[in-house]
Image (cartoon, rainbow, N blue to C red; front, side, top):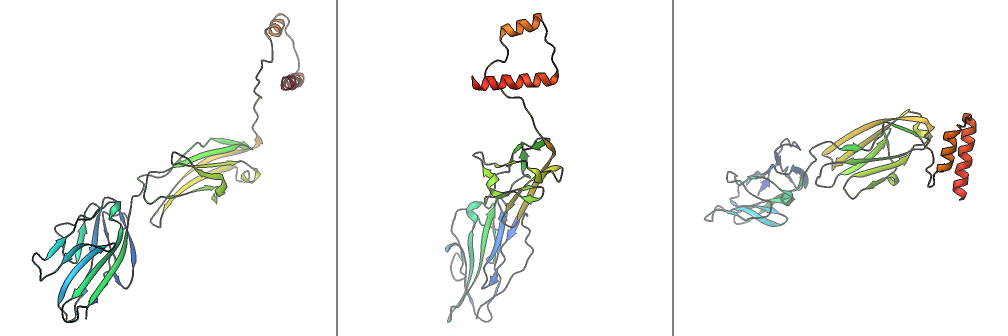
Length: 276
């Protein structure tokens, strides 16, 4: 009878070498970083049987086999993303410089000899990831916002695989999904209006977080002041308020009016322009 032995080891997600954890009748999941090396481990115990073969598969396609009775006894089949190191042993393969094509379901198959030819398999799924090199970048944040102002900010992160999940937070509360959209340049935009509920904290804390599976999480945060007063700007006029004649008259006979009178005059001029 053949019995596959479990292999235990420490797997750092961001190390240069990633390893498969193989357990009997259990399919595990392993993350390996792009450009690193992948260590495939498959120990076994024959328990009285003779070894017939050790074969390695990725997605049901054989890429390595060891059959002691054959000459040569090692056969390597070229597959995309699988470059087996020459120093590999039959039970400990080292795949160099892994790419996104290296991902897949890996199977180690141990077969005994006659008369029973029993077979044991160990399986594990390998997912190659390409993680961002830097923290997310937030742009478009102003130093101060007033009640009623529209806030429009963007968050950008490095290219990665698989696609990251980007979330926005306002004062540590998740932003409304309807206020978030992905732009054509790949950044994620947050757009909302400053309401009274944001005045309690006297500031706006805008945080963008980037998450990839359960192996990567980074965030950036920007803070702006909030004012209870509404911002005010003079209306834009399509026509000049004063003609050249009126300016000439003002120059010859300066007109002195109070501030209140000037505001009333400005309002009337605005109304007249809108009606014209």
